[in-house]
Image (cartoon, rainbow, N blue to C red):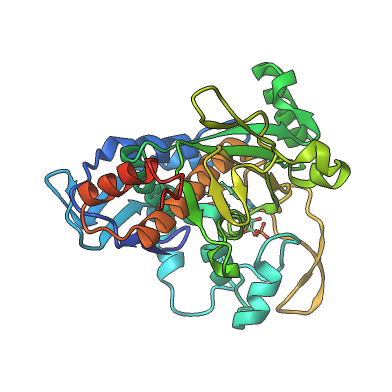
Length: 365
Ligand SMILES: Cc1cc2nc3c(=O)[nH]c(=O)nc-3n(C[C@H](O)[C@H](O)[C@H](O)COP(=O)(O)O)c2cc1C
Ligand SMILES: C=C(O[C@@H]1CC(C(=O)O)=C[C@@H](OP(=O)(O)O)[C@H]1O)C(=O)O
């Protein structure tokens, strides 16, 4: 299974093509829509989320509610496009338009992207695609991946762990909302941490043989690709540096029936780049959002003069959305690896392979 996305934040919409998805999987469009709606929710989102009402349109690869083995194309319309049509379609310099931009926001893709592609006279050409609006496409694909994983007995969940330096478990909903409101009032932004778990996994996903096949490496890459991610930890993560081997490593035991079990999961379900049958546990750190209502020092790329960063409608905190996106990315990586490793044209073939895998923990020869 491979995915490719396209689309601009204020263009007609976001597209994702999923190739190599097995046939005969029941696809309930409402599952995709529920994930898209969850990605829009949570305190701290800006005015854009009041404009959008993300719903998926299936353009190919699914007939009568089942995947048919052809590339699946999903499309999510940008409602805000109606307000941007002229600006998005204009062929000339947009520098005079109030939506054209020449000053850059530290922390966003503006500066590096404008210099890379020669967009010093209109940074909008960069931010339209760098925008996390693209995550709509990943969440749509992630939902399809989750539907497939569920058929194989694998579940993926995510939740917010931390906002700024405060653990969510110690906060009431009101206190959580108050933190965001105080940050908004200070014209600032805030990051945090989320945790994602996958359960019901077989032993053996990924491979220790090559860097590009290692499950932890592929998960880290997918998680780092989410806008705002600054760190990815698997299992005990950075805490591993402070623990002794005797404290960190998850000892193996046998129960009375001879089944293997462990009392801890500091490895986060992955040893040597291979799933070890325990839950996969990944935590991610999101930096604060780059657009500030009290802009940071910056430069104007057109005039090459000192300036302040441009200010536009923006989110203050996106942690709930970030958790939904992280869940989708983990589901995509797991589904991709499963489809690569246990190549199957149909769901039934894949389910049969998974049944066989359950009895494969021992070399009986
Ligand atoms: C769901 C979501 C919404 C976001 N909303 C905004 C926003 O409103 N304004 C902004 O400046 N950045 C926003 N960002 C962050 C930028 O997209 C991101 O910082 C930028 O693309 C640069 O990428 P990097 O953070 O990976 O370096 C958002 C990120 C996510 C995940
Ligand atoms: C549109 C989404 O997020 C956007 C991500 C984003 C950015 O710079 O990443 C900037 C904002 O866009 P706008 O300027 O249109 O308000 C967010 O709203 C979304 O999550 O669907």
